[in-house]
Length: 278
Image (cartoon, rainbow, N blue to C red):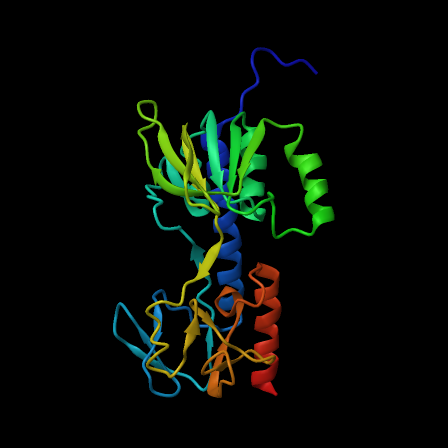
């Protein structure tokens, strides 16, 4: 085998592949639902406050059903002081677009989302700096797993980190003209400790439930930081402490906060359906 010239990656091709893969998975799921006789309505459903009713927010049309499963998912959490333009300062959603490959990218937060993207960026030639508020990187990981991840995914790569600091202010830049500015303060004293100027910044500080504006209050459902309380059968409770079961309303996935992972949401969906069917 002989390769002539310089071997390069195709940034646009990588981005398109990721987008096509996501669209293919989405399309296959929709196709499976249609084949099973499921009606799919494009829109955003909200509870009306009346039992067994859901309203399409855009059209205003009201649908009735014996049981309602809430599965709105989650959205990236953006801390106060961080300005996101999805070009030079972006969330994981914007990072998937891969509009550019920055020479130096700061990743705010060092959980599994930040770690996955650092793997991608360093493979494409970027230098990465983690900014973590807690004393250690990967703070939510099991310590043995964190050690292995640091050895395999960080130590031999162009990655450094700042721990025990908040990114108190992040200002977008202009690609090729002005850097992204990140002001950092000590997590304990709140005093300014450093200002970084980087080519791009990714916000990977976790996700929050996308439950705002769903009419939960009208249905008598209190949330805690946006999370909906459920029992072991995925039945929605009126509140987290000593809440009553809301009849025929269920909640699965990130919105209930039990385990914010896709396979957990799938298992919870199966559980909800089995309990609905008895």
